[in-house]
Length: 278
Image 1 (cartoon, rainbow, N blue to C red):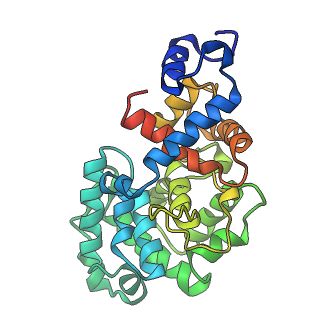
Image 2: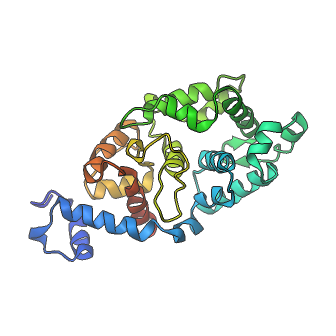
Image 3: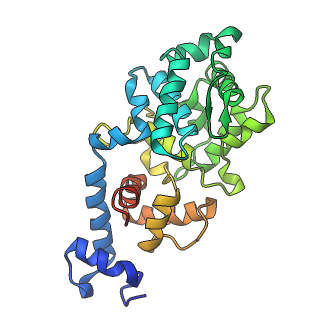
């Protein structure tokens, strides 16, 4: 550790990029650095290589949120594969996900049989369609379900309650693993990413901001290997595992930088990790 508190290996990298003298490095410099990276990556060019491009194909609110939820659900592994398979899934849904969810027949569901993305298979996809219909017919949709259990500065309890509601209908036990539960110490990366898409209105055309009943201040960073590694190098995070406890630690750090929109730093952490090998 240097006298500033930053890891010495990345201290010089940070100083070089910030163009500040080592003795003047302080938490404000870190905030300025990350804010500059948010501006760099939180713009429409980000969409071209990110799974968020799938819900950007739609204009109806329900189409955006359903396509976004399904895309986020399979968002692990190779990004190109995620995007290709999400597009394929939308084709199986006749490129009209809300209409398919609400009006599908058993014959329609059979069209999903060829679908697979890693461990998420056709049985899981069919179960998700049935559970999504339940959400809209019995619980007034996805937004209302998350908002019902939202806390002032966190949606992690709401995510756990969402999972319970999502699987109220008869379901395959195996499919439950595809919806994370923060109360069981999961970082719930994919759902937190989905919530960022729906809640943040970044004014740049990346995140949608179509859920008005929730606030960006309630969001948590989608913690994955990239954002986690960068956060540790910048000493925003010390815990080694990317789990629920680590998410709370990172949440706490990011809220000191911007309590009204802490999850905007996902763009900085992810961008630094994926595009700059920081």
